[in-house]
Image 1 (cartoon, rainbow, N blue to C red):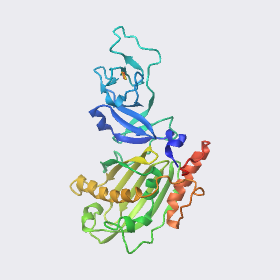
Image 2 (image 1 turned 135 degrees about the vertical axis):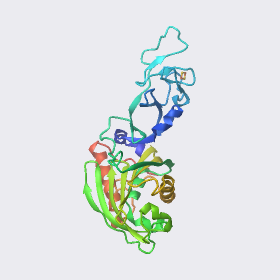
Image 3 (image 1 turned 30 degrees about the vertical axis):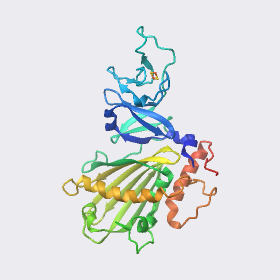
Image 4 (image 1 turned 180 degrees about the vertical axis):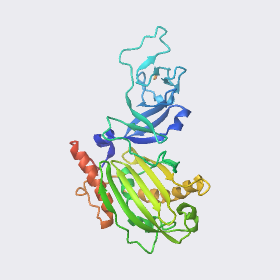
Length: 341
Ligand code: FES
């Protein structure tokens, strides 16, 4: 599936960058092939607009925030308000503005410390993170980084218990136990929930992550898939009662690149496990996923009849994800577009 060729994907929310980044000035971001500029009104509200000045097409992300709190183009200083309307042309002292001089704007919200954008009227709300702000939980921004793969590859990888023994054998994977735990599935209005119990290796470096010194421990996972490209990794360690809940949004930049955003929620304290240790632990694991996913073909087909990839029983979550994406396309009158070369 080439994500930039499937219009229905424009009708979902995606996390783009930390809201705090906008304090540095207008920021560029390409979403589903659309060049955008993100900026912030004086009250902190984020705004998403097409990154193209309607005067001589300069990228507005090269501009600045004016004294009036508008987005000013860096080329000749035309100013735009949050509706995208041109409100000032410094070279026209009489204040004359050509009728229709404006820039397209997009749905934009600040949620969980990130700027979320939908290019067209969203079909679903931003995924709910119930741990955010809940008593006893702390929120940690782990990272956002560009990966050279597709969001479908990331989504199915994140529910794939059968790669732990190989991709993650250097840390928690049990190389000698490659047979994966199976999931119990529950279909939901946002996608699905999948629950399982997974034994993992618990090296000394992870004792404060898991909250236990046992050499092998269990992960009780209640994972969720949010159509089209967000997920929850709901990890609880039964031995210690520690919750290690990760949310990801695999935001499509274009057909072969995405921005992976990762939040972590923990029900322990900084004294029990320092923030930096948690970031470093998950960064190393995610780097292993990234290396192998960037070595796959990014154009995975959601219609598994269209191109041959063989499957095994533990691929079920990925198959369900592909079926749900295919049903989404078909419900909106679209055929899957994929590379034919
Ligand atoms: Fe933007 Fe001229 S190109 S003001």
